[in-house]
Image 1 (cartoon, protein in one colour):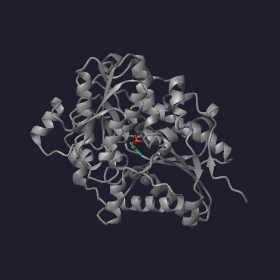
Image 2 (image 1 turned 90 degrees about the horizontal axis):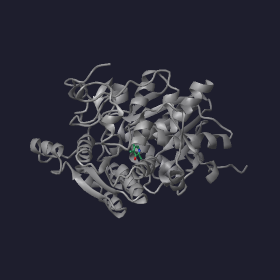
Image 3 (image 1 turned 90 degrees about the vertical axis):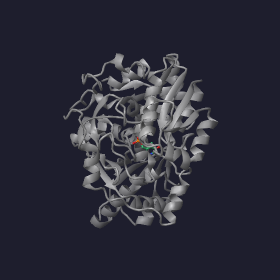
Image 4 (image 1 turned 180 degrees about the vertical axis):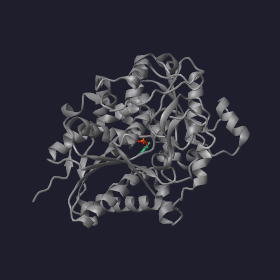
Length: 454
Ligand SMILES: *Cc1c(COP(=O)(O)O)cnc(C)c1O
C-alpha cells in the first residue's frame, strides 16, 4: 500500500491567528511582581523594555489574536512546517505505536525560534524601535532574532554566553551574516557583567548573566528595547502556530495523538506544540497527555519549587511565578545548551501544577542514543535539545510494545543539530557523562532564595 509520509498545508491554510491559552486556563497564572516593590507589574514597568503591543499580548485574555499580514508573509518563507509519520523509527523500534513529528528545523535559523523572533521584530519596528538587545546561550535564539531583525531593518546586539561563544563559532558567524553584533558575556559593557567579572574574571558565563546584561543595556538606552526568546507569555503565544498547524495536519492524516511530547528549556516549543492540544482537552474533553521533557541535570519541573523567582541571575527582571531551581543555580555543562535554564514559563508551570500537563527528566546519554537512532531511522540529525523529546518518545513506544497496544505519539522536532556536531563528536568519543543531580545542587539555588513563596 502507498503510505503517506509527509503532511504539508497550503499557504492559505497557515494559521491567521495565534492561540492564547490564558483564555482557557482553569486557574489563571499569578501576576509577575515588581522586583523592588513586590507589587504586580503594570504596563508602565515593562514599557522601557518591550513595545506596547507585546505588553498587551503578555496580559491578554483573548483566545485568538490576529497574526499581522507582514508576519504571516515572512512565515510563508518556511511554513507550514512538515508533519511527518516516522515509519522508519516505528520499524526500528518494532512498536505498534504510530509516531509523528512536527519538524521546525526547516526555518532559516534551523529551529522553532523564528516563529516569535519575526513577530517580536515586527512589533518593535511598528513602534519605531531602532535597536534590540538580547542574550543567547547556544546561539539558536540569537540567530533567529538576527534573521528577524534584518527583515525589519532593526540593529541587534547579542550577549552570547562565553562558553558557547568559544565553542560555537558558526552560530556567531550566522548572526554576523544577518548583521548582528555579538559579544562574549560577561562583558565589561554593563554593570552586571562587570560585577560578575570582578567576582570571577574567568566566568564561563550563563544564560542568567547574559539576560542581566541585555536587560540592563536596553533599560539604559531610550532608543533600544529588549527581546526574550522563551518563557514569556507572548513568546508562547507566537509559538502556538506550531500546534495549530499540527491539529490540521493530524486531521489530514485521519489521526489524533494520545500523547504530545516536546523538550523544555523555558517552555516555548513545548507550549507551541501542546497548548492547542491542551485547548482540545479543556474544551472538548479529549483525553491527551502532554509531556515536557527536561534534562536530569536541570530538573526544574520534576525537582524544583513552584514559587516566585527572577528570570535572570542578577535580579533585574520581574519576579515570575514558576517552577524554578533558583536564579543563582548553575546547571552542569551538558550539551543541550538551550535546556540549561533555571526556571520554566509561568503558563507551563501553572498548567503543570494543575495537572493539565506532565513532566519527565532524562539523562544526556539516553538522549544522544535516541538522537542517533532517530538520525539513522529518519535521516534528520536532531538538535541536542530535541533528542530529549525523542528519548521520551522511544520510552512510550517501547511501553506500547510491552503492553501490545497501539497509541499515537506526536512530538516536536524543534530543531536540527547541524551546528552542534561537536557535541555528537564528544558523544561518539565517549566523553559525555550522565549527571546525577544531588540534593546539594538542589539546595544551592533554593536555600538562600528570599523571593516570595506562593
Ligand atoms: C531554544 C531551544 C530549546 C529550548 O527552549 P524552549 O523555549 O523550551 O523551546 C529547545 N530546542 C531548540 C532547538 C532550541 O533552539
